[in-house]
Length: 402
Image 1 (cartoon, helix red, strand yellow):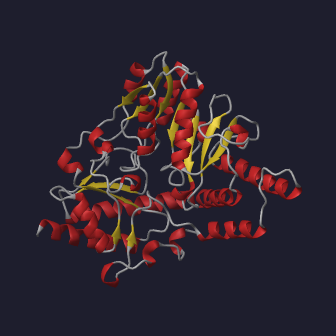
Image 2 (cartoon, one colour):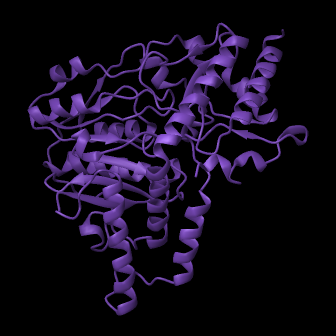
Image 3 (cartoon, helix red, strand yellow):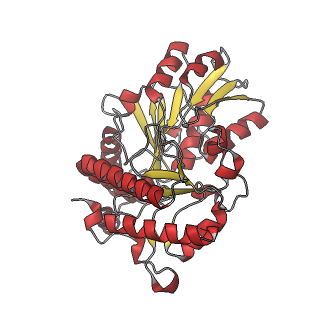
């Protein structure tokens, strides 16, 4: 059943003047699906012991955890049964990306080398790369087209004997633009360089198959697809060397110490099961709603710009510029009018800096400064889209003074 038909929405929150808030910030986080809450409640009530304990209660918890791990991996196109791949549970996407980049790059040897990332990565990847630079590593950036698509032809020229890792996100968090990961991964394999992809925004929004992508590692986070916050995962091929970035006990093959959260893992699996069951309907419905949203806004504001509109995109992400307006002021006014969106990623909210993604696409600074991100979810309805368009146009016109 489509999640939009359930009583699952941030619209229950009251905005200014008693109006209900329309939540269009699902790329920041999604509401947890009722089935996920139910599965987690049952798990909590069961009272599982620590899965690392060797007594019977601990071993029962371990069995549940490992069955959940295998099923989660299978949902994402990885194979734990034949031991081809590994799935490491993390606290979320940021930790998964850090483990991939720092763990894979530094596993090759003690001497700093080169890593390559795209110019449109999430902050947690950019900051991790900066950390490696401080330690003497060389970081090269793969540029993008004006539509925000990574320039595949430039990768071969950047790869060298010193390259330890390439990391390119699968779907951009601000524009929704999808990247040619299969092509990039093929070039990396040819050069004998492992490649990681941040698939955090893609999981639960488009079909995802780790094996088919051809990458060495992939990150996901449950709260982006109606699962619980506080858990993510790094999938990595077993033949790829990696070193831990946290230290403690022997959990998860020594790669991620700390008591493993059985209940959160169960919740993430349930969210993936819901996605798998509804994926075709969700993709079709969200694509239709996104297109309706953009077309109606464009009709009421012809000079509006949709970033990456000419490239393949996620079905529910719209990065939109309102030329002549200030994005931060527009965001504040929309919040008061009961439309929740974002000025770039939630992780960067409050930052005075313009979007690195938009600047890398060649967007002018004034246009970047007028841009907002709207992102739909499985709970978004057509009525919400139509009402949101009315509110956005009303507020934008008031900001312009027309």
